[in-house]
Amino acid sequence: MNEQELLLLGIADDELVLGWRDSEWTGIAPVLEEDVALSSIAQNEIGHARAIYQLLAEDADALAFDRAPEEYRSSQLVELRFVPDWARTIARRVLYEAADELRLRRLMASADPAVAGLAAKIDREEAYHRMHAELWRGRLRDEPRYLVAVDELFPYLLAMAEADDHEALIAQFEPKTVPSNTVLQAHRRGAHADGWPDLWNEMTEVRRSVPGASW
Amino acid sequence: MAFEHAGSVAAPDEGFARAYAHEQYGRRGESAALWVVRRDAVMEVEDFVDELGRNYHRVDGYSLKAKLAEARERAGTAPSRDR
Image (cartoon, rainbow over all chains, first blue to last red):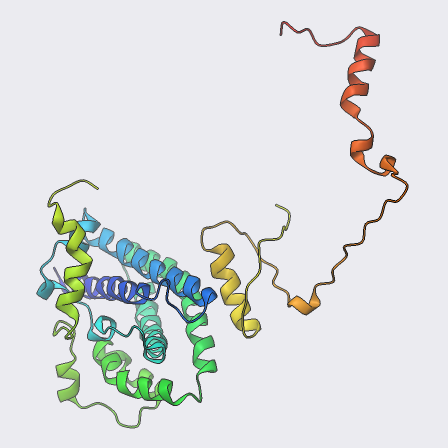
């Protein structure tokens, strides 16, 4: 894969894994409406992953589920397991959507019409995810658990984002301390989070149970 | 497509009501647009008395189908049963 394809693969893996993590709230979100909304958002993210995988490969399922855990390009931010911590879940949604918006904007300006077109389609759905994140951000503005979570996750956000976006994200979230290069290096894409092997195992379990089956 | 009642949402404010309505009643492409109003803005009208049974107010009080069949019978233009 060339650099552009690796970048797209990283985005698709982020969307797949975040969709998976957020869908862990299905049935146990704090209120029913939120249960439906967050589950719907999680499904959208998985749909975005699917569309990007289809740009990269004939068989999106094979690309999504037939790789070894170390081959995934997802960021640690999306790999972290937060259930039943709602403050961290929302902090991640808010942070993730901010970085996702910046990279989508860049993809929408891509010279490749297939990439630019797909990015524009995805962005039209992400607008609702951003609205949802923004509502929660407003609601939890003074909630200590949320504020602590944003600070705690900010280094993961910067490690997920491309260097071009760091300045904008720092300006937007005004972290108490800007993470050092050592920290960013430790959280870098590809150096998976602790919970990743278990998540990979769960995500691919059914597909691996009957290799080569046509579902 | 006419507006019809889709359902209700419980939400802490108008922003969440909009977002939740969008996901509850729009995520499967079943809606082209939604009207979301506060519960206290809904005026309920439920008293429909008809003490004297004036069924001529209602469309089912006048069966057009039967009258049409009679008229066709008289005019001899009733549709053939073979067709």
